[in-house]
Amino acid sequence: MENSFFGKIDKKIFGISAVISIVFVLWGALTPEQAGKSFGAALKFFTDYFGWSYMLVVTIFLVFCVALAFSKFGDIKLGKDDEAPEYSTWTWFAMLFSAGMGIGLVFWSVAEPMYHYASPPFGEGSTLASAATAMRYVFLHWGLHPWAVFAVAGLAIAYFQFRKGLPALISSTLYPLLGEEGIKGPIGKAVDILSVFATLFGVATSLGLGAMQINSGLNYVYKLPNSTSVTVVLIAVITVLFITSAVTGISRGIKWLSNVNMYLAFLIMLFVLFLGPTKFILNVFTDTIGTYLQNIVQMSFWTDPYGTNPGWVGGWTIFYWAWWIAWGPFVGGFIARISKGRTVREFILGVLIAPTLLSFIWLSIFGGTAVSMELSGDAGIAKAVSENVSTALFAMFQNLPLTALVSTLACVLIGTFFITSADSATFVMGMLTSGGDLEPKAGLKIFWGVTEGAVAAVLLLAGGLSALQTASIVSAFPFMIVMVFMMISLVKAFKGEIGLTSQGKASGKPQSADVAM
Image (cartoon, rainbow, N blue to C red; front, side, top):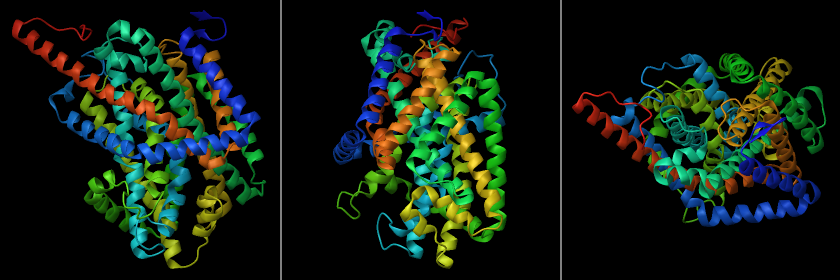
């Protein structure tokens, strides 16, 4: 269906998604207290009864990716056999990192280590042991597991889109299981609608966190009031900016901003590395990689069944795993869009290793600096976190030279991460509601951009950080089930392709990448 403003749209997917999104925004805006209570009840239900499933399935995703990368399927290309990658490796990594982590990594890089240092998952808090445990779990939450989620979603979308010529839709990834009629029928439509909502709420969580942190930074440096109303205004302002970026397209706005992100992030990292406790940072990085790898199996499956620290797993690991799954459709769709021409092995290893190492470096520099300051004396960072989590980064900067300058640069970095994450999501939601159009029209991207900003504002009004966390966990659960079937579908398709390739070699006839499955 063509529309003068929205361009090409899938009437059912767009219509149902738009109506439900608008109803949700109105509900939260008109009755924020009731909405907040409903979010709290939903959070308790999913963490109490299904927390184990997030832990188990996300670990399966990681094992699946590693096995696939080193299997006979690793040489399959995400595109035609003679296609080269569309973007340079550096630009590819920059866009991967900016879209996949962005605001969250900046927000939690100081706050999370401080939380776990004071209240670890087990053992006594505010000790040397809890400091080591804190860094290990921070690495877990921002390491291989989240990127495995993105790799599964992105690989499936890229393979069926570029290798098999199917539309850039989540439902296309289930083609071997559902067939053409199935992906175009009610089940396929339901999967795509679900993907829109997982993306919408997952990104709204990040937008809310980013706006809270920018408000805190401006309060620290320029004494701007730190309040929900100011945060909502910031969401509105930056929504206009990321919609503008999204309308300009990947090759212009998103690509340019992603590269700006990387240079600015490196500048701030180097500042903290050399003006902070450099030796301690390097030792923390090296030591924590070792303890992370040594304990990764135990941490991956730890659900605290005996009540060592009630609520810790649900509030941290399960929240993160749900958050990454909720980001799966949008980050997966986006990295699929920028990964045409790469092999399965190159895609998986690139997506798993490069951003993970960069995240570890970032966390070691910022988290390690904060931990060192607290171990050396009362730096005020842990206290700031307990009072307002969004102030953590700026509380740390208070203990370094050039506080005002670096805090301002950090606000700019958060803003650019905000924009790249949101405009990537806007682009993907445009694709999902336009039948897989690789270049959705500006009107469609504007609609979803405004909706993202509205949902983030409503969640903040309805319960702040708790409501943001709840939205991720609840929206992720059904999509997690879809992703399990995506894995099964990929394996079935890969086996069929290897079988056809073998037949082609035996007969001496070339095989097309667009063979029917």
